[in-house]
Image 1 (cartoon, rainbow, N blue to C red):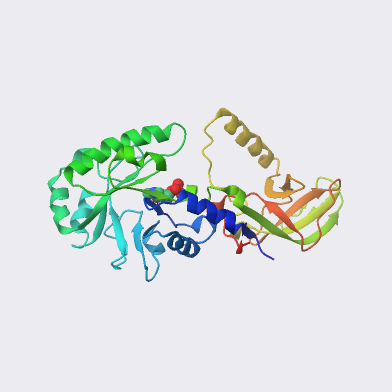
Image 2: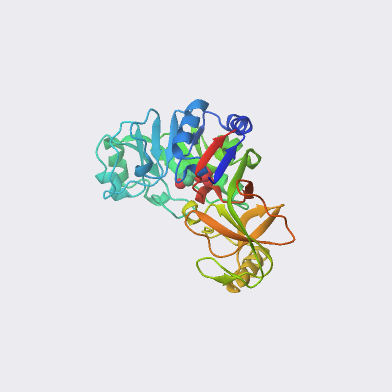
Amino acid sequence: MPLTLHVDSDRWRDHLRSTWNPDIVPVAKGNGYGFGNHRLIAESRALGARTVGVGTYFEVPADPREDVVVLTPWRPFLEMSHSKNVIHTVSRLADLVSIPAGSRVLIEVQTSMRRHGIGARELRHTMLLNALDRIRFEGWSLHFPMGAGGTSANVREAAQLAKAATDVRRGALWVSHVPAQKLGDIGENVKLRMGTALWLGDRGALTVRATVLDVHSVRRGERVGYRQRRVSGDGHILVVSGGTAHGVGLEAPTAAATVRQRAIAMAKGSLDAAGMALSPFTIEGKQRWFAEPPHMQASMLFLPSAVAPPAVGDTIGVDVRFTTTSFDKVSMD
Ligand SMILES: *Cc1c(COP(=O)(O)O)cnc(C)c1O
């Protein structure tokens, strides 16, 4: 009785093939963007990718066949993989000195992201210059912010940093969050790491369905659930697959950037304060209310009597964030 991600596999793979080219390094990390990392690595291989990116050392496959770039920078206290296929990201001068000699290394340069990276002013530091002879230098890594107006600014910034870096040592430039058509504006031998736009770039190929596990009719004022809340009207309680263990109801913080978005967040907040929360489950095209906070593997919804309830075993739609949801099943339809 699963929470299932249905993939229209022809449509999805059409999108993968039309998006991917040999300059693109597919990224398979976290929950595998909903698909699972194992599947994404297999799909990357089918596309012809020689290199994939993963988030952490824990995500490096046991015996990788392709090159694997670890996006989280190496630190002396992190357990490292000793596979010859692993390419490390190093983002501090001190780490360049302590990473084992001969390691395959991308040197990360700090961008306006200010997440990780060696500052542009430190690129000619003797610690870096000396390290270049100890390590197996694989190139420079640049990670940019996303979103509004960011892309053309990213390309400009990337071109500047790329020049500063390749003046120190020629090498490939590994960038993120730059439009694929603009790689030529940054420099030569530019590789683009891509996750979301590749795997989730055609949402129309993806559908999420939850299964109705139980249906109970209720009258206004009757108590339901762990918390024995009173229902707000006559109708039905639906028990559906998908709970906190799947990530349902555990929304990642959103960047409520605009006034409108903030207003929506406030409106939702006040409903929350009134003890009600809109669920991601949809019936007849409308999001339905949680009867109470989601349980581990299931959620209880309230459906007013005006709407005919689905039957046990039917499926209903769910609008979830793919990067924070663990599906029970991924069905390649
Ligand atoms: C996660 C990550 C990516 C992929 O990000 P998407 O937005 O999913 O394409 C690229 N580069 C770095 C350094 C990352 O950490």
